Length: 297
Image 1 (cartoon, one colour):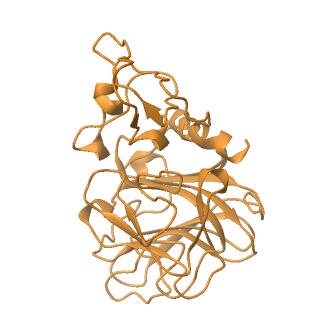
Image 2 (cartoon, rainbow, N blue to C red; image 1 turned 120 degrees about the vertical axis):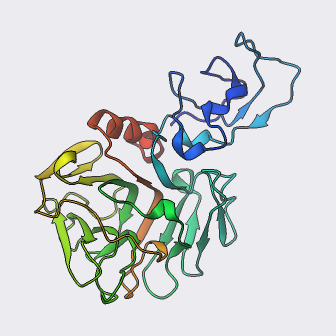
């Protein structure tokens, strides 16, 4: 990712602030090129920078052309306006008056523009209290930048079980790295202990290496489940059964780096996002390219 450049601009006017209005979760970036400014000056309607205006921090620097249409959750450890490098609360970057709580077992590193790190165990998680925008039905995309350091189950994003399901069951959705370094997507299909598990091939997420991992999943109308690593399709599992939909929405917390029964994550997590919808391959590549330079790729 290009570094911050004073005065650099790739949109006709900074007044639009990347086109993100009050309902930031449902608007698209607009414009062209890669937005790479951390400090900017205001431009007029003709795109001319006012050199007498003060520099201002770009609130959405870390989106950097990441798709935001249908975005329901977003966490980026490199975003200083969300997380300044210390403290227990991450401010919501989507403008929906939500926040992420960082528990005591989650560390922070400024390397790679910032990422969170855990070694697994008690309090090694981050969580968000429930809001209806985390209830995802029918089709979903989950993505993250991960660097795992053990052969284990690594919980990236989990929405907890509902109804009569035990704590060791997936809830509305669960995205994780498995001990064989495959990617797994799980979801509960009703209020009982019935769930589906879809997985990629093994050895797609090696130890100690940053990888962009992404899953898209939906029913018959959405083409089944696909897994991507560094924007490359590594598994296409097609339609997944007769239910074909994600139906077990519930009012439980959304967790990062953990599951309710005590399974955790060990390694680095720099970024996570959840979409209500299916990203196309072109959009997967767009999101990957937006941050790959940060990880030396």
